[in-house]
Image (tube, rainbow, N blue to C red; front, side, top):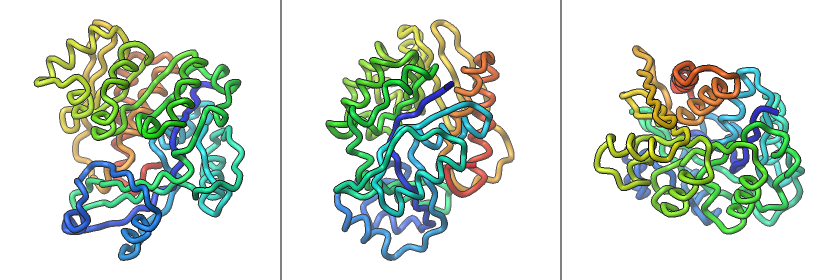
Length: 309
């Protein structure tokens, strides 16, 4: 198997909202808020019209993108044996992703992420992790990890105790490890741990400019370049309108954005970018070709609603 993803198995519920909905509910645009109470989640959803429901989760989105590009891939993520859990599993199987998890009745329901898309196409997320946030080391299939060339992890997994153990077990058994830093708030919550991972455990790190600047408390992007060179690994960064850049030891390769796109929804842009880059990486393309593939995939996904092509 080329790549095995381990992440939060979450069903995305996509709704269009006006900016005042965010301020009314104390939400910060373009970030992800964790919701710990099922009632609060249902309350938010009660006044909204659902545009689309789709199996999601950051790493799962990347893995589906990799499958669509013809790679042999798998995914591990915890769902409950409920209606959404069944939908989630079907969604992966339909995309030819091997699912290494047997669902059973859990105390908590399958995780859900409410994705609020404002008129400027930015997305703000409210996530009720449900049982996804309870993934533990027993849920991680050691054999599947050892048989894959690379495992792909998400920073979001670090938000509770048990997932961290699953994370550690995965890293210990992996041939190569790639990880997305996920979200600036996530970086701020786990800065010391993430810094340690980037320096010592990860072969490939994916982040956007805000996340990496926050991680190393950088004042300028030059500091980011110096830091990335000093780490001696592969660090792949997206910079919005400035395109994307990869720093691999001393090599620095850049790629511009695609022009003239009709942007509808930025959900999944980073996930599909990672898919495109990893597709290039595991198929022995150059760093420039891998960046181009990442840019092409993210350009496609932002011209539609939802995080899967």
